[in-house]
Length: 248
Image (cartoon, rainbow, N blue to C red; front, side, top):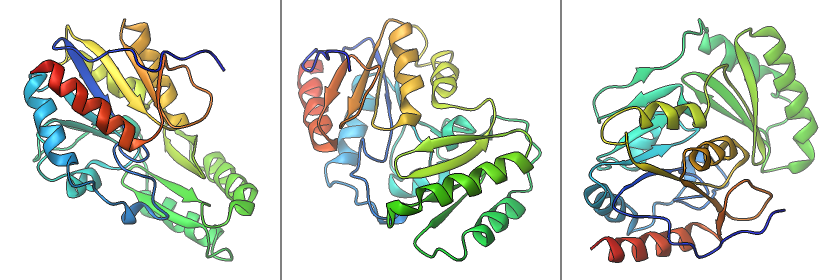
């Protein structure tokens, strides 16, 4: 693992800030619906949005509606489902892929395939499905086998490994693509991207931010391309609060 610049001041008035949700802004929970929003998070995000001229976005594997439900007052852009959805305000959700998918059939196939293993959580998404084995890590191989079978029978969909989960998502989507799409739009264009994330799904976006002259911030343990690391969501919150003080 490469050395990391742990305390580099990377957030300035000219930054565009991109933030993952689970494991980054909030602690990982046993179930996706069980996350707890830290009391200071909504206000912190609102202040960052103000100080950075609106150039703050959430980029997550969760769908947009889910993120908006957890953070209903967040004023910035939201890229959900690994970039398969994009919401620039709280009203509209744009689909960013052209896959013709019978999502109800996909959800049903996934649920039936793991019905003998109640510890596996089926997360139904608008543009795919994820199987979580956090409740019983010994079921990893079962999940991987089932998801490979689903990928083989659903052209245009690709596997996305994650922490204690495997997801099937539309090909051509990804958090790096979501970052690129947002960086081409006002108010993000012309700014220096800073991307914070914790999962394998975030690595391409962190690499892309750094390729554009910005920085990636790895939250938690594990190998990473990021040039900076913070221990957990609480450490990220402190770093963001320090940045807000510098931004004035």
